[in-house]
Image (tube, rainbow, N blue to C red; front, side, top):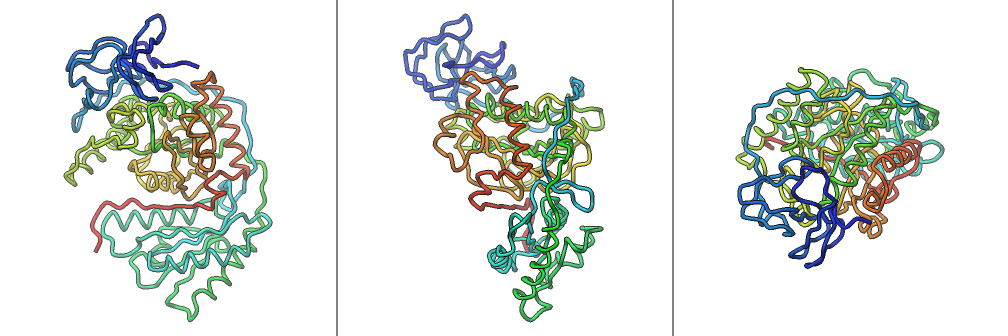
Length: 493
């Protein structure tokens, strides 16, 4: 096993793959460096002197500037490194995308819906139109689990606090998200549970849903019936009978849409877990599939890499707007654009937003960008898509699901138990986390520093995703976790 890794030949820092003691002599290529102080795992060590004001280079790109003179073998972190990012920037399109080489197709065992979409789960979803009926929805979830059996795998309620007392974009986003959830192919049956007096009531929501299978999607307005629980249970029993008519069948993996997200990152995330997901993304796209990358604030500092991989000028312009719109969102609320990374990120070895973003975007692999999506917009183009959503784990993962992802891949160096509306695969960046949190982690990419290659792990992850798509439960599902969060930006009445 390596002690440290120099990611790019242009780098002037390396990353510790294990805790390094003061005084240890480290061989980095044909250079020998002595650690002049302890270097925690995932943190950076200077490979040569870096003067105050000079760039600190990792991944072949600047991750900020030295606050003071840094000597060879010193620990490089927030105490002596600062961001080099400014505010709004002017970008120039310099295309650098490569063609995707097609691979032999693969299949998974999924559910074919009447609208032609493919699902990887056959569940009944209870979707409240407003937070006022959340408790009713949760009680129905509990009681309706008696109907689970055969090909019906689960009954899940998705409580949320919205649907009323909202204005402008917030109200629009809630309606779009709920409509996208109702249309999601992982649900074999949907009960839309309304109150009756809310802004996003059932008649309004139907305008956003559009055409739907009336056997698969049912509605109940609680104020209209004497006993809403009894009425809902009758509908749920009918939905269960309908959903049990769906059975798994072979479906081309090119119909998979996979969301990609990271959270609780550490210094190894951009070296192991995120590159593994990037290799997976390239492989799925080569087989005709689709991936979605989100959390726009964690593209800041690495955005030009994604911009130059855009298939054409129109997508480049959309990506510029994607980045600048989020920066304007921050400043409109009088917030610092680069107030990132989090305390957990810093403890894991990430020092600046550039450091975080360059690691984060490794999940995108090398395929060209084929689509740029607004929040709540369903994916239309096969291949790699960029989606507007914040870095918040629950909000961003929900955004991936409502844009069409049947599965979300979530890389982490610190660990997290949360879920999303769809199976959420937790991928650890280090083996210690995978061993410690076996009840959270589904896939260990930490073995990359133990001799496994990026391509090998990418193919292993692809095979695992096919298993999940074919019915294998992830750890969050085994625990019964299903989460949903809507992006709130404005005023609450």
